[in-house]
Length: 218
Ligand code: GRF
Image 1 (tube, rainbow, N blue to C red):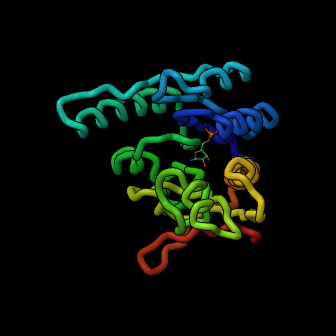
Image 2: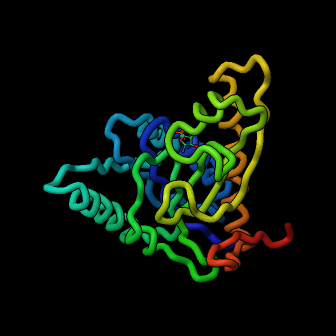
């Protein structure tokens, strides 16, 4: 298996980050977390990282003259850390900022025909893009929902789909029960996705101006 050198970017609770850190602790031979980064000094992911003896770097967004300038400066600092540590894959785990085209391009992979930046989104894309997808799906009254692991492009939750998993919404579900069931799917998908990448089973196929992700043996 190939050793994946990854960074995790998270803004809040960090349960997905913890899931990945746990996976790396179980399989250090193929998963190497070289950086955990948050933009939020109050994020719980900082404490979760400590449990795994992983330092979580806090890189807060600083206001500049324009939003664009602020974003450039923030991303440059993050990229500096990623380059310094030889990070090859970026795992977004509840990261609340939209990455620029420039950032995404830095991780472009010819074999994948997509960027090596992965995100977990809590809906069956393309339904319920954007913020609070669990709430959006729950409030809409879906009977079936799911989670999407996808590669990031410059749109919001529009990148090539890597893996999807579904779960049911039961009649008496509270929003909390609905989310809890979804989170279990999130952890399972991220684990499976990273393992497939380490096994080098994943490649991109380009048709009709769009990249589709093909998984060898599926
Ligand atoms: C998850 O539901 C993830 O799908 C979404 O943000 C949430 C982050 O949760 N992108 P956590 O911080 O990993 O617990």
